Length: 591
Image (cartoon, rainbow, N blue to C red; front, side, top):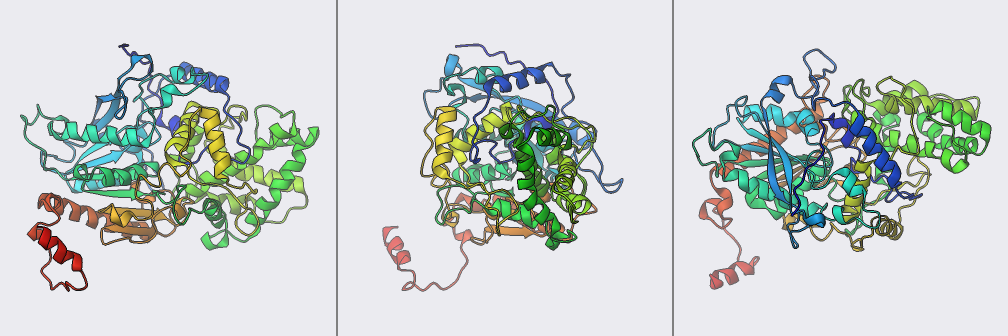
């Protein structure tokens, strides 16, 4: 068995959230394949960069009293730990090069800060497609309510991300003819990781057995949290392992945005909401922003057709080199589309570096409050005298996202998406999620037409990664489909109506314990962020409702409600019509 020595360096979290649920190449109409040489070069470049602390001092937003990231005091309360986790929970247990385990990183936070004692609640964050320190920094709702409930906070890292690596990035990218070392990157394996970790911590006083002389903490209520893909994981975990989590707050969790549902998920809803976020309905001055973006796609393609036009595009969009062909120049369309998507997701009421820092790798600066509205009003709500003038305005609009730090770093189209994190995210997307995504143009949205094709997407996935994707939908049957009321309970599904992912979320209350909260004027899981003086009343009300549900789940756990659904203490005394429910008589006879 090989002894693993992994090369690790502490880098800022923002270099590793690039996934954010959107496939980078899978599902795209052009469906270019990854350049592994470029990915390896990107990895080497990151290795040579200077090391940084995983956390910088907390940033402030609209007033001096507001914070947007965890404070130094919060970070000081965190203990970094690792757990010897199995690489393969479902097969032989032995991976390539005889690897059997990896060190899964997790943090225990707030023990002394929140006055936690054995038996007090546990708040558990289900890490998603990033270095786990990002969620420690930004999941302010857990920090704020952890203090109120005297809870211990646990932040667990997803396999293959951050420092939770069975193989180095270089080793993973060395598989020229296949993806054997990536084959253990699935939602099933990740969920089992969390179950095994919780089981271990539960039996060991949540990592503090020595401190509390082995006191039992088996009865501590466990409340799960997750945003985006992490919210999907938290939801699936509550269904598969209800004995390990008493309730879940799932922010911006598009579990109904996957392929294979009946009825099918709408592939074009994301683009429609992004377009809505550029409209007068959210405060944009007029309809011209949408119209200019619609016209701009053809304007940019026309420029890409000539040598002079390509030089202009390179200058306008701050490309590192002038493209030599129309095909290579047309990448500016992808760059603009990405900025639209991410500014739409970043519909927060205050300046934030959460998404721009994650995607661009910026350490300073931030997007303005409601960046799509701001960028539209600043640059695109006017008529233009020429196509070139319009494209220049779109370039300025685009720079609100890509140059959010103001450093004017040039964009290299050849390697912009060829990164380790994008490569493995598309693999996870293909193996475990397969989420329809496209754009129609026309009346549906302001983007270029990019038709979703499940067959083409699966063909790309199989070719890129040498796998066989589940053609009926890898997640639709495993995790409840649209009939979650039969399989789940105690989940709050929150969504912001300016987050383009919200149409894929649960938008109806499926039962008394599967609750939908739609938050007006909110972007991607805003409710999980720190409270802010600029917050709209809608998110204040959403958090208050979530606190009520959390309190109820803790009470249920403390009263051993989950020990048996048929326990007499769990049944309300009321008359039941046995003719209306004949199965009750049959069950009584069996009993």
